[in-house]
Length: 161
Ligand code: HEC
Image (cartoon, rainbow, N blue to C red; front, side):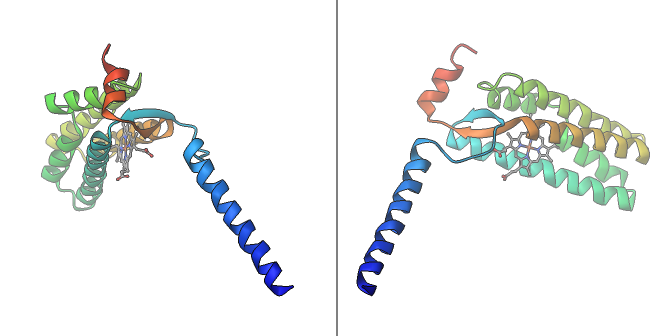
């Protein structure tokens, strides 16, 4: 009797694993309804590295606010600000997601004001610009999530853009 019970228990555990596998393969169980930002695996890794760099710049800014280090404010602002390379990268990353690049560029141009404020040694203005920049960060995070697709699919999705 005990043995029979064990067999039944084992079968039902196995079934529920099979069901889980099936769900994961056919329709990922996710309640994340944000819009996809389609990227290849390599681009996705690169995008996340950029993002971690952005967070490091924010960390350095808050540190610079405490120590009133205007040079550090200026440098960290530059890392978040607009540049030809940054524009190119955001354009590339956003090819498959309408609206993404525009949001990215808005964030970078807001961050340019952090650098300006650092140059003018205006702590309050630097803090205000950092706060506004962060609002752009969180606004984008509320809308997009990465979706990793194959290189072939990425080319197909973006060739007309
Ligand atoms: C234009 C859109 C956009 C903007 C602006 C943006 N991000 Fe992101 N960020 C993303 C996306 C998309 C992801 C991936 C989220 C996911 O797939 O769950 C991400 C992920 C991250 C991550 C996680 C990285 C990892 O290793 O997993 C951090 C940290 C981050 N962003 C910081 C920032 C900061 C700080 C700012 C502003 C200074 C910022 N981001 C601005 C779109 C954006």
